[in-house]
Image (cartoon, rainbow, N blue to C red):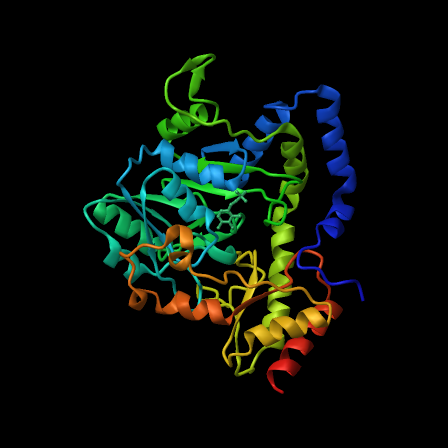
Length: 384
Ligand SMILES: *Cc1c(COP(=O)(O)O)cnc(C)c1O
């Protein structure tokens, strides 16, 4: 059996080596390392794939989030609501811009931001909601867009983990993750579902004016060379990364369906296990079917219900199976983001999840033997 990895970037590269190498060679031959033709071509290809009017590439997913908030003109003191259970980048940029982060609890089965908790947290100072499509599945965008409309709030989708996922609205209409809110960010960090070979990110929006504002902001606030109209940043996707992404984008749907296939195998093996809660998918189907791309499984995350999560992680590691705990600390308990406004009673779900979650190896190259080996280890350990 091939060595099991959390993410197998090398195995994936083997399958697209020629495309990637040729694409990178073109950049080397052209010497157009910044804003070369590959960046523009990738932008167009991603706009088409997502069916969104504007993709603005930038340097990484954290910058993308920050620039979304700058582009919307959020001001110090404005409150921005986001999930307590996610990667810190989301709350970090809110705090960096001197906006006021308002962390709220998540749902116990999808791990996504809880709608009632958002509603409870809205005040006259609230300006935006940042749903994070955690682990590859959209937050409840029907309810979030309704709340946003009712209270005149912006919605910034943090789509770093769900590129290629589709959200199906209650009325049956389908839209790609990251094209539903006013603006969205994504990351092309190597281990993300669409990863480059370094850092990269992008912003998506259907709003022409906002897209124009943001295009200047990513480049020092310049709309005309050496005329700085607004305060911007230097945040660019370099041409080599765009070249890699161009070679990978045509494979994204296949990659995501391989992830779904691995998830389906995992969940099937864990059926009937009383100590395991498998990830829930929305949309009515089991979400892991072939025709539905509601979940793209950036992570396959279990809840271990018999307090043996840490023991299980150790057992997996001892047997050569990597695993991860995403996330071990709720953001409201992180030193940088603690605040006396928070009340422990408002975070029953995240406080529980951090003790129970474990993410198993998930990538495009997992084979049946590997999955069987992993699921057998998990089941044996939890039942003894
Ligand atoms: C990875 C990630 C980011 C940050 O992306 P970088 O490209 O690493 O800056 C932001 N939010 C979430 C939810 C992420 O998973």
